[in-house]
Image (cartoon, rainbow over all chains, first blue to last red; front, side):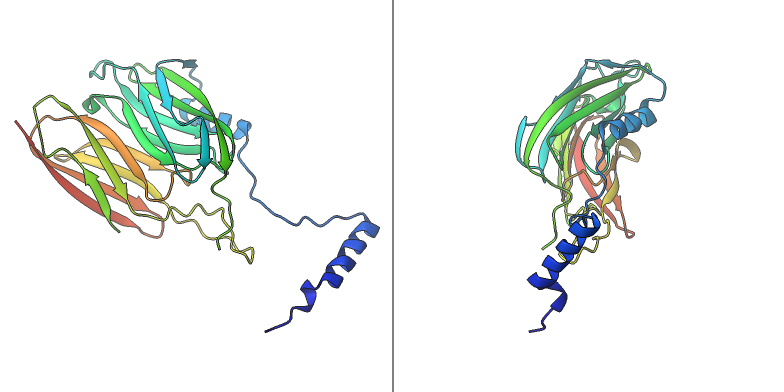
Length: 159
Length: 105
């Protein structure tokens, strides 16, 4: 067995003492910067541009309490007749607190018949999920759902 | 590189049918670290598309927030007999395709 001198308790205590003396506290854990509600807003702006996003028409089915954030089933459906004159062009899903604000973009059209998409997602924290639908008349509709997560995904250590 | 596809084998013309797809893939986020602190590089599927007799009927852009072994389900109107072609594209040159046939009467 190789002995690592630098990881002994005495060395660590010395380091901690030194840090206390100089007033510098070493940061032990380094995590990537998480997305923030501001980043989510920016990502939404990228998709909708200057258009007004109204609330309604969209339904987001996701469990309100999630034990394991690694696979969370999610279904987005939009109330739309799905005709060539009036249909959903795309559905976009965003999160607030994963490392990245995007979850997925789904492009459909009048041939879909029903504006509904299901997938499984990862959630790094309890947060608000937002789904936005882009309709053929150019309008955007959204819905937001709060989800509580007990075991986070995305940033855990690889064993 | 295995795909699971669920398409009804036959449908009536005009029926709305559900298509379910699953591709086995690790979807490594690029945000995880090993015990040594090294970042595990990102390896995800970035796009999925479905063509019905050559016409694209569904497309998805995927992000690290999509769970491992991406499952995607969506709907389409059964218009004519033919084939559905599915394609997944990902990091590190990943590309996979699958096909499913449907009889419309």
